[in-house]
Length: 203
Image (cartoon, rainbow, N blue to C red):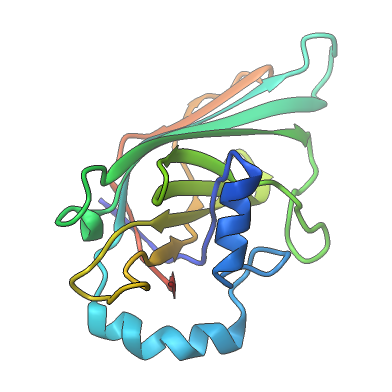
């Protein structure tokens, strides 16, 4: 097992989902936790003692543009399975399958303070009230990238109506083992489980 120190990320496939996440006050435009909001939830997070998210079969594949004859433009995609053990008691769905993709120009870094990302959230799974969501935060290269994860679920045991649908956040940075390094197709894979700490809370 690998325990990752984390920061935060999220995927949202529809504008309504993105708006729902934004409305909870958890993200700034760069996708980072706002310090005053973070400070107000530290004691509550400690009291609830969240278990880490469990990620399995994390696979990254970057394929070169077939019309190019040198290392240049790639399409990269990530897939993984995501279980939140904190939501098992009160929710019929406590896990989801995630996938997302982006373009990457060989040798350049995506994201960070010098090159901020404006990547939309993508939903891994959602119903009328709850969701698993993710988005890309930084992509240095196929061996070093960071995602932002958000899970909204029902918890009437620790929260009272109308605040009984909290959203928890994590931000894992991945350094996946190399499976195939041929320049036209780069594949990295970790079957896991990879444990990533919950570091943010909004409701």
